[in-house]
Amino acid sequence: MNHNIPVITIDGLASSGKTSISKKLSTKLGYYFLDSGILYRSAAFLALEHNLESNPIRLIKIFNTQINLVPDNQLRFKIYYENSDITSTLYKEEIGTLASKISQFQEVREHLISLQHSCVKSPGLVVNGRDMGTIVFPNAKLKLFIVADLSIRAKRRFEQLQDTNHKASLKEIEQMLESRDKSDKHRKISPLKAADDAVEIDTSNVNIDTVLDNILELYNI
Image 1 (spheres, rainbow, N blue to C red):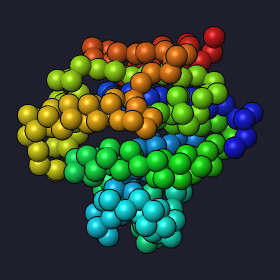
Image 2 (image 1 turned 180 degrees about the horizontal axis):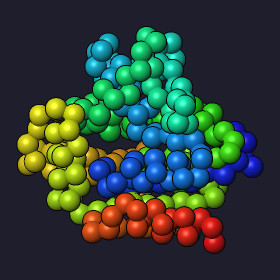
Image 3 (image 1 turned 90 degrees about the horizontal axis):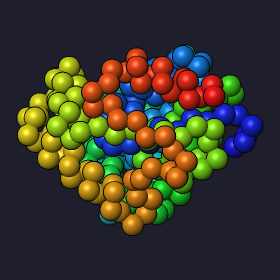
Image 4 (image 1 turned 90 degrees about the vertical axis):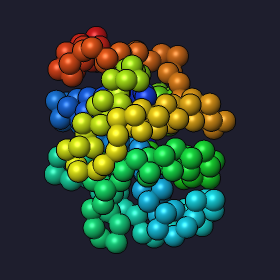
């Protein structure tokens, strides 16, 4: 990993808006973008495919041979499985729930950290997740932590799933998000929390363009 290449980390709660913010920020700066969650989601996808929910060592071996991380022409990293781009299929709720559980395996986390470090490319990287600023990139140039009210996050997720024709009720989504929050915050390995030097941003009642302007101002200080 080249420590001279700037990295911006954006951690936060599920469906808080961090992915949308990250994409817009990376486009504005001309930086690469990595949603670290897709790595854990791809591991969860493989676990479901091969019945390896409780076998992290075997899961890593299969991950190495069947999963590829490739940037597209917009500098956004995509997941390829058997030479097909499966990124858009990884956002189902059951995959997200299993990804949260798989992320608690130390072997999986250590393997994916090295993969995330390999994504640091010139001119820079915007990366989001749960422990980007605390564990994966502790020396990042700017660290952000995004939060929003649970009900607002559930509504956003509900609308997002409707757009992709995935069926789920608003109540079910809110319960899933609440469960994931609890799991992420209280797991023994790399619990979800803001880095000591991170800037917290609440997106509950703020539009994405305003958030982006605030981040750009912070980045240019």
